[in-house]
Image 1 (tube, rainbow, N blue to C red):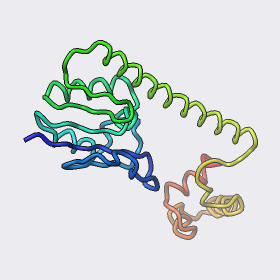
Image 2: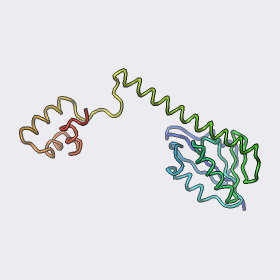
Image 3: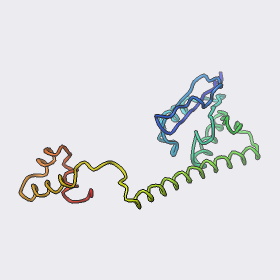
Image 4: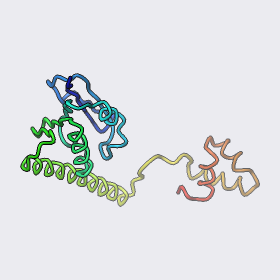
Length: 187
């Protein structure tokens, strides 16, 4: 008996999937709340792919929810249709069954290319934002664990003969972190 299986994905845990596949009756749904950059690091997608059987239909809200890379997208859809699984993208109104339809394949490849292009633009804007923040002297990333004064004091204590392990314990950091501060690789 064929089943309607849904796959939903958002990029972060604070986002929700309620609008994805809204109104579509599903027998089972799988949901990931992490980046779609790679398909192999999404546990629910992997579980979904293992669950699907010949005759089932995989329902996905839009192409970019399944993959952000054209090659991965094509491979996923081809693998599924070769197994007898239909793939339906609701936003784009496309359904793939494995039957040869040149126009549908063209649309699919164009939509996949747009999803990949969009991902590239996001990364480029992110890089530009980071460069602009650095140019303004903003500190990016995690705040330093030790203040410059603590590092100076720790270096003086180390020169006086105290062990790095004892210093790490006193300052509440790991030995590796203390060694990095003593060597000046964290500044």
